[in-house]
Image (spheres, rainbow, N blue to C red):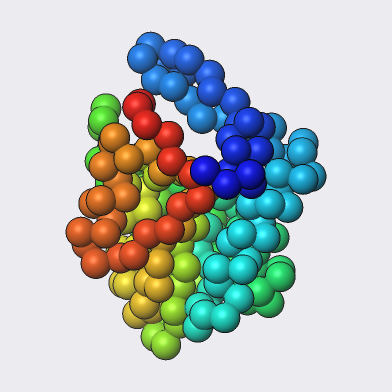
Amino acid sequence: MSYDECYVKSVIRTISDWPEPGVQFRDITPLFKDPKALRMISDAFIQRYIDTEITHIASIDARGFLISSIMAYHLNIPLVLVRKKGKLPGKTIHQEYKLEYGTAAVEMQIDSVGPGDRVLVFDDLIATGGTILAACGLIKELGAEVYEAAALIDLPDLQGSSKIQDSGIPVHTLLAYEGL
């Protein structure tokens, strides 16, 4: 484990039994109060994508917006939003996905991306993979290509990153936490 990874992990809070018993919630909000940690993670993602052919970052609601906006600014590419259904104005498309306890839906504006675009999908955390896979489905429906899915944190025990990779989409994360 690198110094940067150790430092960033030391800033992230684990909150036991939230939002329900048995869950170890990985709270990234302290990162936004620590300029050093925020710079470390932003720089790591920027360096990864600076010499790639991505044309857009599609960021998933809501903590992912904060990191991906820094990335989009430094990479000088558009940031498009993937939000919970009913949160975006104008014409949108949506896709439902399964949760452990039901279904949810995400949406994008229909003019977010299109043919010829190479899109990085960004979220703060990969758990079961449903949200990222739904976002990738929307991007493909709009005619664009998904370049990669990226997140700050992977929870490999929930197998979301494996599901995303099994669908043919590469995955990159900076940190992993074992257990739920």
